[in-house]
Image (cartoon, rainbow, N blue to C red):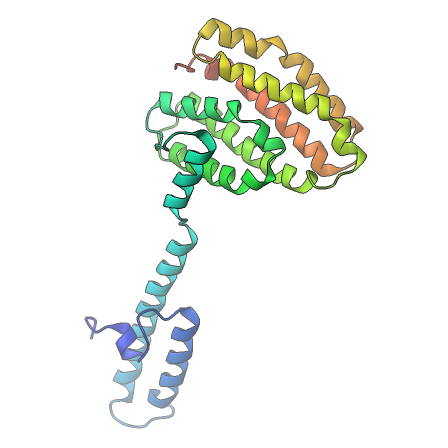
Length: 248
């Protein structure tokens, strides 16, 4: 009994979804249940249907979850190549993860203005975060995960505020541009520890002060969250435990 194909027992296609499995089971069990069918085999037939139902349901649920958690990796790799001008490689070492961080900082303008890239950037950050989750948890991986998650939050807030077009959108443009230059300067100096440290400290306090002021002046929650997220990224990048591991 256990070796029988559950979909065959239920008289449905192996590709049937959860709803079709439930419909088939309900229809068949009405004709075999001992309360309705007094045949001597009805009890065994009902148990057979119940067993097949649970097995088919489990397989359909696994397929649905697998489909939900996957995306077209070939499309992502093509988008990555078009976006960064190089082939995508899954990060494995500490140096790989820091290279990806540097790449993000070099292209940080897209987190503020290029809404058409938000879906790709979200997929990219999701991959980086998942890869970090599979590793043991040294201090540097915790900081990187927090930075990548903060960039993902920034995408979410900017997707809401970028198209508002009100006065608040333009009031903080100077701060946004200064932040972009700051991140790009960090990326440009990431191969030299002393230069990296100098670029991290150069405008850090000024930008954090600007973010606090922008938060206090804004009347829109998403703008407040945008600048709070920027402030968080700036603070995380300057952490000594992260900086000491930034080896490229």
